[in-house]
Amino acid sequence: MESFAEKECSALGGLFQYIVNDLKIATPVWEDFLGKTSKLHTHIKATVLALTAFLDAFQKIADMATNARGATKEIGSALTRLCLRHRSVEAKLKIFSRLIFICS
Image (cartoon, rainbow, N blue to C red; front, side):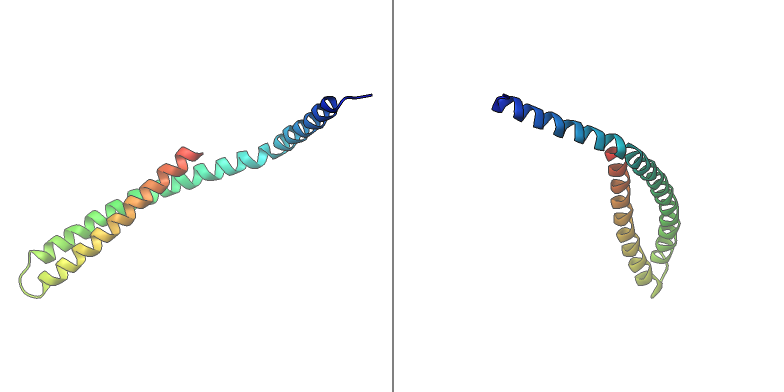
């Protein structure tokens, strides 16, 4: 007759075996997820580089308008504020990209 401890160990062993088998089956799914994550990271990185170049060009236009005379100066100030807001979005996108890379 089996003791209580033997029954419990047998049940835990069966549960452990079930979990290990489940993890073996899930491996291709995790590999696919990691591959897609890597691809997303690469595309976000490329997007950030393009966004940086765009914002640099946009800032040049804003600076040129700010240095002009008349009503264009106010337009230049508004464009500079808009550029600063977009740079904060760019910074958050960079952080998101780094976090995706770290977590994968």
